[in-house]
View 1 (cartoon, rainbow over the protein chains, first blue to last red):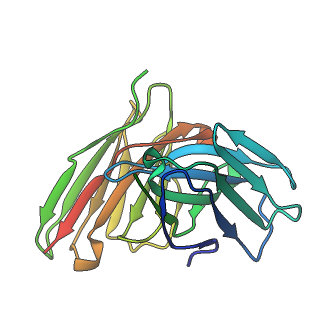
View 2 (spheres, rainbow over the protein chains, first blue to last red):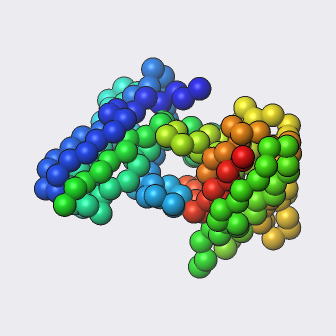
Amino acid sequence: TQLLEQSPQFLSIQEGENLTVYCNSSSVFSSLQWYRQEPGEGPVLLVTVVTGGEVKKLKRLTFQFGDARKDSSLHITAAQPGDTGLYLCAKGGGGGSNYKLTFGKGTLLTVNP
Amino acid sequence: ETGVTQSPTHLIKTRGQQVTLRCSSQSGHNTVSWYQQALGQGPQFIFQYYREEENGRGNFPPRFSGLQFPNYSSELNVNALELDDSALYLCASSLEQGAGGYTFGSGTRLTVV
């Protein structure tokens, strides 16, 4: 059972456009991680958000953690073909009893040149 | 430092056969987790090994088993393969049960026919 809902499931846009993808849960999580997975590769960690209301920026990517720590969003500005991939959110992975990562199904992003 | 390496990269097996997948953890990491990623899904946690002991298990049947060796490399064994076992199998290593985050390998693509 996937406890994290990601939307949209698929997104195809033109180079230069902006986009936002979402990750939602009915329960509070202590931290949330965002990964990008390219075809034929494993997921690569982009960011971990921990504090409600937290905003983190990674170049053209902006990650936001909801105030209630039940949701998160990833906004990409001026998307490029290199941004193409599967974007996964995951809870857990913090070590100790919280070691297991639970992933959403992901958003498959295609950025067309 | 070397990353996580998995072998083989691709594998085709017949239903009912057994398979062994291998993972070399990143240098300095003592924890290895295994995930199954079916097509169009996020990775699902199979189990984790910490200092050569199984540290936790997801909702997978006993025919999925594993080992961790003194050098912290790991094997995933699947007996009596079923068609639904076709998936990308990902290995992730970390320090101390996930502290500091996980590094994923590129995975083994298993096809069961």
